[in-house]
Length: 307
Image (cartoon, rainbow, N blue to C red; front, side):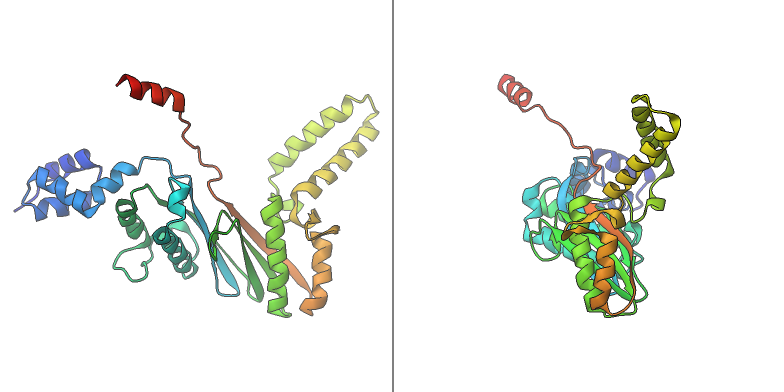
């Protein structure tokens, strides 16, 4: 039986399921709309799509590494309860492993083949929505690699190995001992998790942000009534202090606050046995930047009581 575009549209409007899923459902049920809805529900597809509008701001950060490269991924769920579900944790662990074999972009990771399945990562997550019963999504991924040296990983608030609430990658480029470089990189990753620096160096900070800070410092300095030449020196000093707070290499190292991260790197070169540099870092904190739905619990209770 030929399935028309209008039939597909009608089923899609009724269930929110994808076009190809709707066509498959109608084909399987000989064009019977109600039976097609049931077919989609049994497959978990309609159920998943109905949940897809709900805010997923919980979940897990996962990391995976092969030595000279590593990835960090964020897979969201609606509740922390699901994040503690073994099946969800297995998905995040596998997504990280798959992403490591790609270029590290979220599109590539989502389109990649999921282990032990005929479906993609995105398709597997969609199926899991129906099984687990919450909206879930692969929100973002990132990859860091060095030609020589090591990329260290660190998970803060770890639930199980490689999964937690904050994930950090730090690349240490060196021709020296890779394991010593990794050990130092892990310390720096712990530091990054704690301090959340804006950039590796001052030159990497958005010039607009620096300009805004400089303008604020200038206004504050002028309020003191000092001459312009003194004001200029005051602003330079405050900018220097600002960079010490937000630039990774200039920050006081949390492992040894008597040293900056830059100075700690020089010390670490003794163990590494060769010059080394921090090639970059990536930090993912679960749910950052997601607008969470705010609910008025008292109002919900009152509304329920009236109904």
